[in-house]
Image (tube, rainbow, N blue to C red; front, side, top):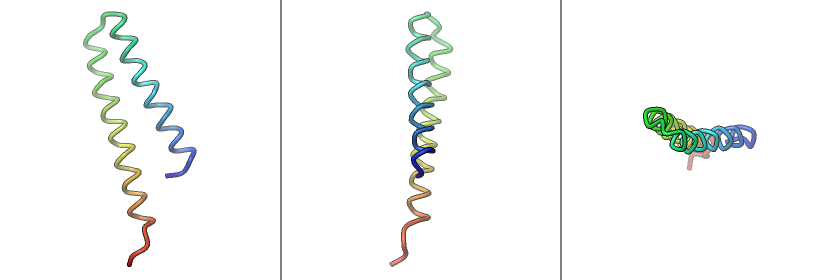
Amino acid sequence: MSKPLALLFAVVGTLLLASISLFIALREPWMALLFTLISLGFIGYGFAMKAKMRRKNKPTE
C-alpha cells in the first residue's frame, strides 16, 4: 500500500474512532453504534485492500 493511501486510512480511521468517543460523551448511543459499525467496516476494508495489494505485488515462485 502506498504511503499516502496508508496515511489516508490511518487519519480517517482515527477520526471515526474519535467520533465514537464524542457520541458517547454526548450520550447519543445510536450514533455511537452507527459510527462503530462504520469504523469496523472502514478499518476492515483497509486491511483487505492491503492484503489484496500485497498479493498482487508478490512475485510468483
